[in-house]
Image (cartoon, rainbow, N blue to C red; front, side, top):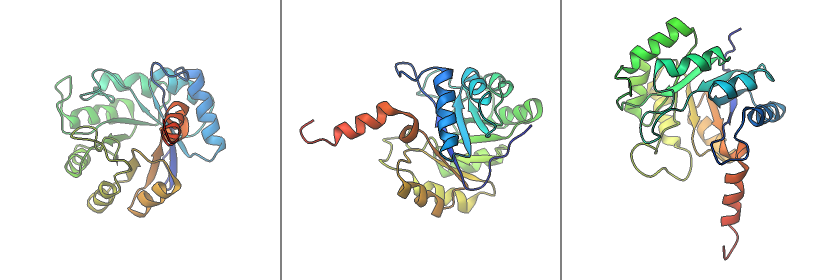
Length: 223
């Protein structure tokens, strides 16, 4: 059954990388259960194993992705093949890199999106870094556009969410805009919603105790 991402949804990104004690499908499933209990309306998850484990414990919509290759390039679901297992594991939407950078298999973004639509039958969320990339991703067939990669492809990321990018995308595109990236406080959530965000993704501020702890430790005088 296809689950739809509803307007006003808080999406919790349940992801952990190597070196994080929570790096396991079982831990991510527990994170997803906790997020749902707290009121999350959807989950974002990386890789078929995590998606399958989360699907087994929740009926919430899952935005699935597959991080492969060099993080300095296109590595969020970089090819059609990288999306297949995630969709089969139970993802309701596929998130992919929607920037204008070359894709590792040489295919165009519109070709990858078309295959996902036609062969996997799921909507596509394009993670972009700029207004131009958002416009191009929508023209290529993306169903939703997210600000996930703002600041990560050309320069130093800002300290907070890219509210202005949310505002510009919401004004120029005819599809839902998802705010993601450095959203850590209720004030951040309100700011991106006021700027026109259809839904909001929060990750580290909820599901990464290592990051939360490090930021709090840095605030102690003399450390």
